[in-house]
Amino acid sequence: MQALSIAAAGMTAAAHRLTESAQRTATWSAREIDTDLTKEAVEQVSAKNDFAANVAVARTADEMTGALLDMKV
Image (cartoon, rainbow, N blue to C red):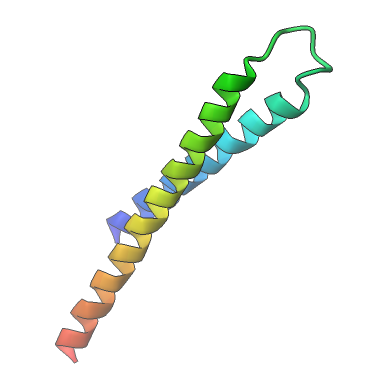
């Protein structure tokens, strides 16, 4: 089902964004380049929300598939 693959790709992208932001935050004091911690906090919340939205899409697609199969039986 296409919705599930799109949701999975979205979850992967959101997890990747969160990981990268967390790494930038964790190495903040060790780097000479300034990292905007406010921007990183917003990025982490945004990635979390994107992940949750994609989970909701996957859950809804699963429920719709289940309802369709129940009607066919």
